[in-house]
Length: 190
Image 1: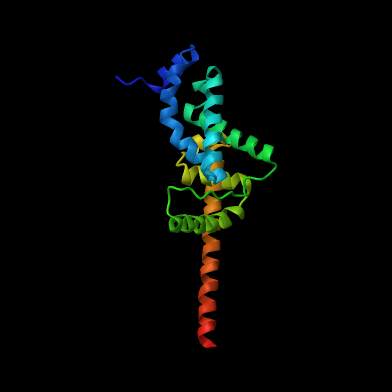
Image 2: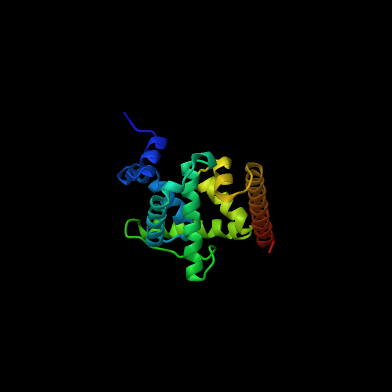
């Protein structure tokens, strides 16, 4: 019989921290991915994910399910860990570090880099808050309720920021595409 998440948390809060490994196994991939999209650097994401789980384990007694889900609590710790990392580095979250790992082909890495550069261009045109919420919603697959718990915004405000951000991206794409078509038409007339 599988132990429920609330039972595992309760056991951890009572001092049985070996149970924390089950929570780690359940969330490590999602937290790593969340951090990776904010740092774009494999080793940094690994380090910050480790720090996130160490902080969560150290503070597990402060978790209260009445204030939100464990998942949201963990994401909030990850988010704050990334913010602390960039403060210590004296850089901003929009500056990306590119890491070429040995496990992917160079062609795939270049293609990924081009795609990320295009996405980054659109994301940089948004406010920091809007960019963060769109990443949580689209890349991390978080619900609006979870985003609200992590950011402290209301569910409706989170939904509105995503909607407006995507509308802005759509308009930028339409303008870019229109310029390409106009350039092609003019080029053919010359």
